[in-house]
Image (cartoon, rainbow, N blue to C red):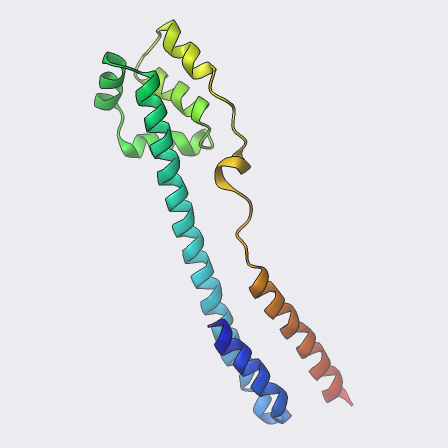
Length: 156
């Protein structure tokens, strides 16, 4: 899609001002498609990170809440409920497992101490930084500059 956009942009340089007027609609449509695909990929990425984080939380939970405690949690906690807790607690494993312990009414000191020893994670460490869109940004910046130049030329 980006190549198609670039091709239209390059072709537009060689056309007269009347032929160029049709290009922005096509280019805008392609930009919209690129943005939709970017958003879809971001959602997929977020979903994969959520599943990975849930898996990590379950692994640590199974290790910390051994035996009867873990059986109690498995009987009480659904994946939907765990995901809700993860959202509320910003996927911080320590806080999520503390909340899971509260729901299962686990008050064993050894279990609570094991949870307390987990590191507090920064949200950025869990989810990463912003989605990379540098290449698209560069293309759009070039387009804006080209449109400014063409407006200046048409004025004269």
